[in-house]
Image 1: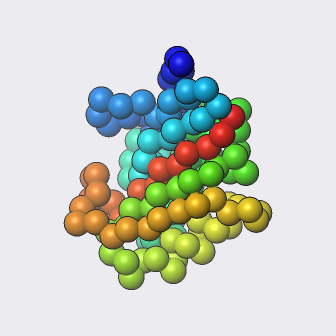
Image 2: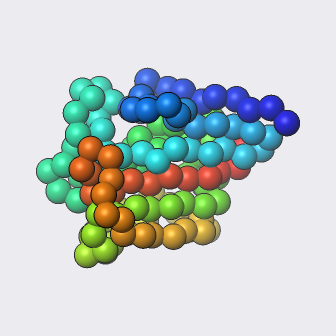
Length: 126
């Protein structure tokens, strides 16, 4: 089985040795997205709602580069800096789906890249 690297300038570039997404067979593995505005390369950290919206928009851009959408997501992983942010993140996250929600786990971690409060990765089908 081969793999195809998915890249778009509509989402932040990788900040390390990884790809924005990898397609292999009919699966798409999207790397964790953090709230970087790809147009300015600046962090969006005004509040957790804006952070989460930027993360979801970054995911949307990577999914779009692979010609799929949120309806194709089968699994998400949400990393939070503090579990007290769960309700606010969940509200924004949920607004990007129209039902048939993917499987998911949400975990609080000690730290995230660049000191952000939320990072989300997804697995989708093609």
